[in-house]
Image (cartoon, rainbow, N blue to C red):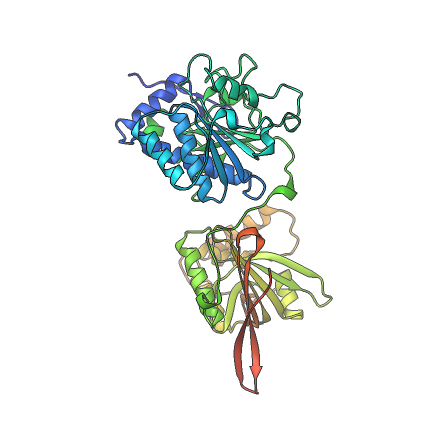
Length: 474
């Protein structure tokens, strides 16, 4: 079979869009020369759909999900998505009118039934879907579907179609998420008869199909992080990079105002109980910090540093932790910077670490002092030479006429130290150490009933100090 030439979207972030034949060819290659099985691809696709849903439709406001599954692979993707949504904390129910006897689908049904996920017939659905559901997952027809939908899918499709100019909620239709292509659409030409769905979210799989160019809903995601370089190169696939460990990536921006008040995440999966926590908060911090590093979180040592000047004016910015032990937490900066000016006139500060994927944050408060010059020297000379020169060049927080000033000074110093001679630490550059008096560990929990353990350093006599641990209400 000849390798098809793919069509691409226009713009700075060009993405491949597949015709029906091209999509089939890519799937054939994945399940042929690359060794994927259909159940592997279905599992990855369903997880991608569930992940995209969780990205936009938080479980607290959209827990009641109806997944409508067709008889083919698209329906299988929906079954897998329903299982993952259940484990994400949602309450899925499934309408699966045309079951197949193939073992892979029977296995998925068994898995869902073992979780207690209800299966409903089309007749059992309420006349107003919004009465019982917050979200509909359209997994009826995939890119290989031909012809006109047959009963009961024709009536199910009709119930989800919202005529132009009509308000979905007034018709009792909740938000709709379509898997790969909206049901009722031609895979290449889109909703040619104006009788198809107009979903709020489209989760394209592998690569968007040509009809996705006509999608006008607010949320378009690409899911299925399984396309290996060999396939991408063979078919000249241009796909966006996936962020972090996510199974989905947004294509484009939401084309309607975001309801900020509705943005929320339900934190599940972790807890912080007294019997699990160290008596020493530094050891507890080390455990959490090491876990953030093991999870490959981006810049786990990034922290918010909050200061106030002598007049009490607060200021905050992100800095990088460069060391911690029983003495405290260390970072480095220019001593002429705004934050250093604050600290030298009002030597108290607060630090905040936030590790989003672990639903954790740590707050640290205490007095601040400069680290000894020898300690600053050691860290300065451990930095890359470019960073050492950058520290010499930057008059941090001061107004400069343009970037060209930085670049000119940088080039001059690079030439000056081109022989590899040691670069002296600027006298106005060095470290600060915050000596913790209060450390609070915050673990996100379901329904906003978070775990908060606070450690306070208490003086006992003239020379003895001890940490007191107490639980705070969320």
